[in-house]
Image 1 (cartoon, rainbow, N blue to C red):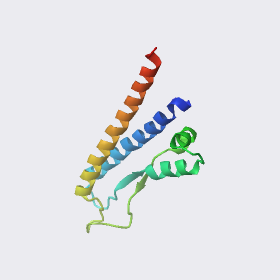
Image 2: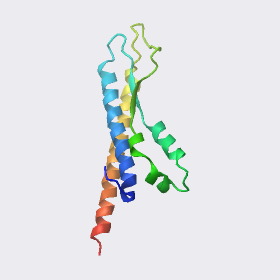
Image 3: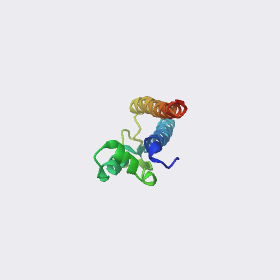
Image 4: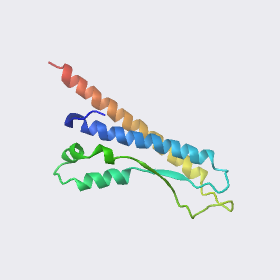
Length: 131
């Protein structure tokens, strides 16, 4: 990570991309365990953490808030979703159709985040090389 206000937005996008990658892996693990008796689906929490940190900063603009977000607090958390709930008699709570939709959605999110980071670096490069 780069510690400068010029890179604050990129650093937050980087954290979001990391969380998205972790969530993709959790969803893939859920799909792999769809037939495992007693397995409970895993999910990743990040959006709530980011929202809480942005709201806790008392600044007038989003850019000011992003500049002050403590990156060490933007760590995604893996949790077991609906531990006491099950779709099936074997105790498993993974719905394969839902997981496939979530996986496709997360793949799009990850691609969007990495594209945004790439574009931000391209803009910085252009700004540094333009006379």
